[in-house]
Image (cartoon, rainbow, N blue to C red; front, top):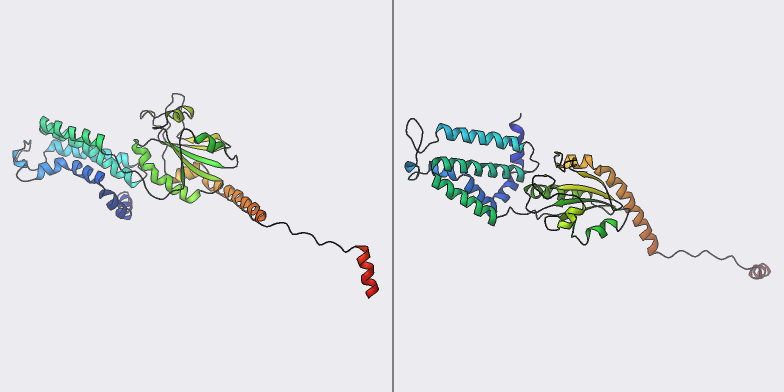
Length: 301
C-alpha cells in the first residue's frame, strides 16, 4: 500500500508532469540527471571507461556505483516524504541525481568530474526554475504599499506570504498558496505576497530572515486590524524556524480559514446590503389631508 499511494498520485498528476518536463529548465535538468547513466551505457563511449567489475565489463555499473545509486534513492525517498507538491518531488529527484552524478564522475575520472561540476555551476547561475503563472487572487506588496494596505480597513483580515524568488521552497509553495486564494478570497479575507528578497526593509520590520539557514522562507503571517496575530513557521528564541509543513490542510487548520471565510462572508453581505440601499432613494411618506380639505370632502358628500 505504501508503494501504491505515491504511484497513484504520480499517475493522477501525470498530465501536469508532462507540462513541466517540456519546459527548457526541466528538459536540461533531466539530461544532466541521467548524464552518468548515458555515459556508462552508450556503446562507443563506455568501452573506454574504467571499471571495478570482476567480469571487466565497462558498460555496466560496478558494485560501488550501485551502492551510491541505492543511497541516492533512499535520500530521495526520505526528502519526498515532506514534499507537498509534484514540483517538489521532481525537484528533489533532480537535485540529488545531480549530486550523485558529481560523485560518480569524480570517482570515474577527475577530469570528467570537473567538467560536470562546471556545467552544474553554469546551469545554476543561468537557469532558474519556472515561476508559477496560474490563476490567483493575490495582491503583491512593495515596501511602500504593504503598511497602507494592511491598515486601510480594520475589518479586513490579511494573510501575507513573505517569500524570495530564489528559494525553491517558495517556488514550490506558490501553486498551493494560489489555490487557497482562489478558494477563500473575499471582501473580508484577502491574500497578499511580498518579496523580501527584493525589499530588505520589509524583511527587517516584520522579522523574517532571508538566510537559508534560518529556514523561515516561506513565512505566512495573519494580520487583523493591521497587527500580526500569528505566523507559520514559528521562530524560536535563537531565531530559527520551528519545522512546519506547508500543506493546504495544515494551513486551513492552523489559520482557521473556514471560520474566517464564514465571518468574512457576513461582512461581505452587510456591505452589499448597504450598497443596495444607497442605490435607491428613501420612499416619502404619504401626507395626511389637512382639516379644510376634509371638511370640503364631507360637504360634497
